[in-house]
Length: 130
Image 1 (spheres, helix red, strand yellow):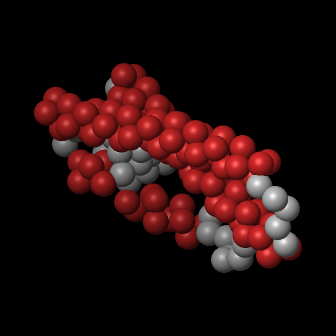
Image 2 (cartoon, rainbow, N blue to C red):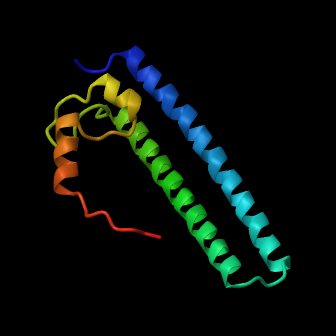
Image 3 (tube, rainbow, N blue to C red):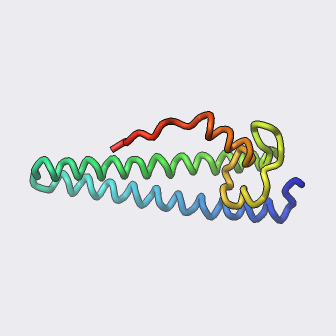
């Protein structure tokens, strides 16, 4: 059964709340990054260990920002699908994406069956990134 108006409203509200939270996180991360960079310029040169820790922290900050921006783009795409009337329809098989899945993952574009298949066929071997 397609999403009713109340379900759509709940999902739209949840996406907007998450969108605002992401925007706040991105803003705070940007400010913190500026402050960290200014502090690094003013700080005395450290040893190689200090430098590697600073590099690691910078990479983690970059990863957080990339993840947040990706989620934000996903929310924007979900809102566009909602406006177009295709929200809640699986992009693979055309079946309905159940309300409970959309509540848990409002940016979902596949039903559970298609998502499982996608993850099996597109899985990459685990490789360390740090």
